[in-house]
Length: 512
Image 1: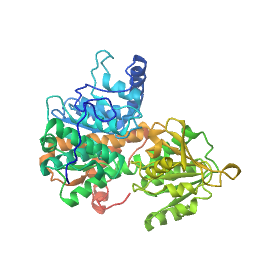
Image 2 (image 1 turned 180 degrees about the vertical axis):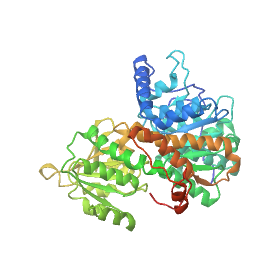
Image 3 (image 1 turned 90 degrees about the horizontal axis):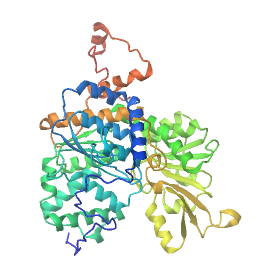
Image 4 (image 1 turned 30 degrees about the horizontal axis):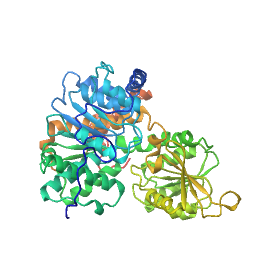
């Protein structure tokens, strides 16, 4: 593509910040009260994260991550702070951003910067570039800061959630190799336009040799989410993946725990915090019945909502039917459902036209990674034409009032209530998954980072799932919290079913 004449600005877009600012950190609030609040919550969370605590004890004297420079792009929460400090205890240098504009807990970010032994005036933690309510330009500014080590090319490992850090490195390296940059008018979305502007501004300041050496130095990435894993497999298929990737998301102790039980806890928590509605008796529809959808359905059923699902997959639809859950279409739900939840990983699941037909004050939210499952761009376009008015109720809760419909109060226009601006509702409007379930996910992440750091040369540039041995280890590290006593196989029993007495206890093809 032709290079558009984009003039680099002294600061990046609307941020007021230089793209290569050289800041040691940037967070919202470094007051002592905020830092102390964050530190106390980190201490409490560690007690609920036995997997990470166990890894600290197991590897404390070994420093298996010594020499690792880990760039992390994952929700900057209290639970993530425990993950970060575990990586540091095991020897890593770490820089961090949040992977969502609304998912930072500001007290967690501040406490992580200060560290367990620092102060506001003398921080001794890790560089964090994250605050709740970033603009898209600020978000991508933050991502570049975390990728840029002082005096260094960049990280040698990435810990990713959604694949944005991996995307920027790959896209930047490809543009430098090709000697071309996409033009701004080629952008398919507002966010893509911001990324393209980053690429143009980096070239203007650093030339054509910034991302290529960065990509070459990265030994691997561990990916947390279904969406990010999808991006990695796409690159693997295309032959464009530049370094090994470990798929943490499809570890059983992630997908069947974080995705399922985490969402079971956090979805309704977010809806109730945001709206204070009584969920009981409401008609709710969950779009998608994968692990996230299953957890979301359980969350709503626990509040005695009347729940239906939508699905494209006959297997998932059959699972729902066997649980007594109606399988319908979005169109079926529009006139009479009160709550709409997207959990598909796809886009345009609920369109602006759909919302035009919903009942008055229907609540619409997304628990997938990106904001395009709900057609926010379509709604914004209607605002520009005067068809819709956007009214802020409070941060991350908005009323979108359709002016030309007739099924609102007194036969006038109706409204829909959209949470977290279509982004991840459980972190935009609440505190996300609880510590114990995140401990399993993050224990997988630490093990993946250790494996990549020590053994990356044994990997090809493909996507790999953590071994079943490690999956079972992660589960075992958490059993202490549940008063569990495992049965021990005899040698004869193990031989009979073809396994070791020490595990793994299931073949790779077993589906949990």
